[in-house]
Image 1 (tube, rainbow, N blue to C red):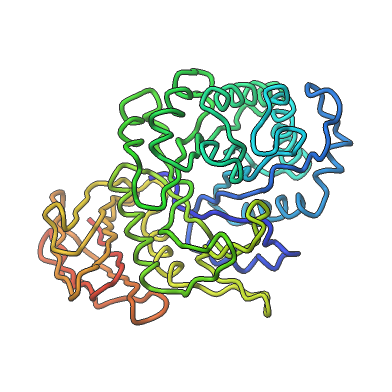
Image 2 (cartoon, one colour):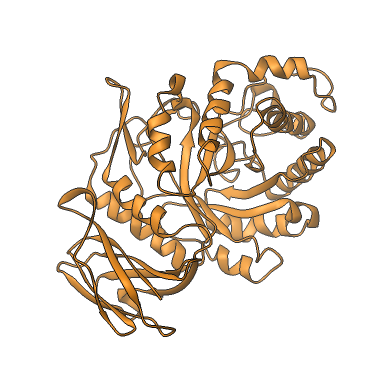
Length: 421
């Protein structure tokens, strides 16, 4: 596993009001933050030669309040040890560049726009910024990001990669294609990206989005080819939430939190090695022109504070249980021989602990036996988030039977069991 984390909307910075929300995640351990800047329309007019970056011109653009929110958010995240920032450029481009698409005659200007963004953040604000998803959901309708077919997207990435090399930022890597449909990634976008050796070398992770638990066989495709070492990230995942993009605030139900966990477990079982929850907190989105209420942290405008939804309770279990470097070692589900209504994924951490993360979505308490074939187990723990109590808590210490861990999981609970080997 290489990166569990969240999507982070910088429009919520609000002169540092967002700091407690960021801190609430950062204390959980090393996370991957998909930091969102949108819309990608900060160059309001076509200016100059696309091959020349005018430092004074871009300084004025990047010191506007909108862009300062980006730099301040990233800077605060990076102030916590072990955090990884992957920048996501979301929403349409300036109208003169194409709006919902990128005109072929303006591609060089788009390359300059993205390259100058990274150059300012690194040289002027001294941020790391070495991961970027420069186009979001190019297979969709032009609202989430400019429409771009596989050939154009690959061409843009090729040009951007060479431009970054020429500016001394050869360490920047891409998270692509970040399509809304995993199937579109597998059948159309990845064949084009993987066929370009330079773009493939510049790619750190294969990015897809999933709101139904399907990875579209993308991990299988990636594992068989030249991108096998890169792995697949579900850079946007959650259970579906009707109205959350358009200003309808959902009830903070346990059902949605449990469904989110089932989506994540399903993606991991299919070979996804990283996933960023959409969304870390509620916030305004320019490209939707409304407040988004996907957040695991609920925003209270009257007090300017954030409070956890049940989604946060559940996802925090995953964030603490599966740090980067954990190895996925086993899957079990009711459909494949496990106890009816129980889904589990098992991991081996770098320090040798066995961790089992799962959901008991049956109608009764579940009794599980977790066996380690390598060694006897010791120092067991069981932590649960349950439908009848907010937050997470320690359950009764599991029993050890030689090399087996005996667990009793409350009805409906999401749980993490761990033991040393």
